[in-house]
Length: 286
Image 1: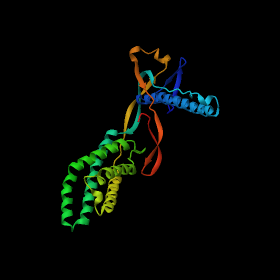
Image 2: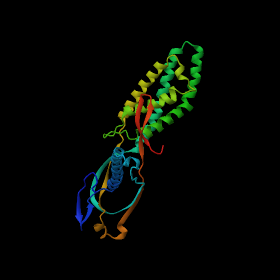
Image 3: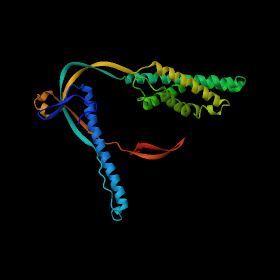
Image 4: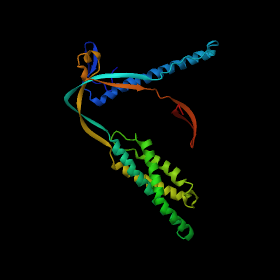
């Protein structure tokens, strides 16, 4: 079984070994094992589906249970030996600490923009109504303190959960996806918040459009200024995993990693959404 990035390989005493793979690329070996494990279950499911069609068309077999095998889990030990090399390889990867810090700062900025824009646009329509303007100013204090903290926290959690993988190959965050997530939170937890009663204002549509426009501009400019890719050099290593090579290595030089994994099952279900009915992939346990 050969890792996906096609490293240089050879034979020693009939065994298979990998040459000059950096330590991090052991993940490719483990990834291949897990991929084969998942593929085996997939093939079993497909075979059961074919049997199901055959059983349905047979007057006798249709009353029998359809055979199906399900892999509950996989446990294996990976032994390997590592030899230092004088070669150095450049690795480029996402700096997730920097990305999370960006989401944290952006959440605060989005919250400030949403609240400030909403207060400004709302005040313009009621500036001549003394009583309504007074109530808005009273609401402003709560919006800029406790509610500001509440909304920015929800925004941060949503961005980390839904946008952690929205980084392109050049290291920039997808501003369109960030805007989409941000407006989902703002609509649900700000504009429709029962205690704020913003949707009852006469100018609510204009306020909402203005807020959306300012938030979109903020996010687009912010995402264009941040790059979360980080390049560093790492020592190249010779990694041996075949039994022939490992038999010639001193026992204290052999390293071992134990793995115990389980298949995560999902199923496709029809769900009602704002745009109608659609197929959704959800965990089977739920």
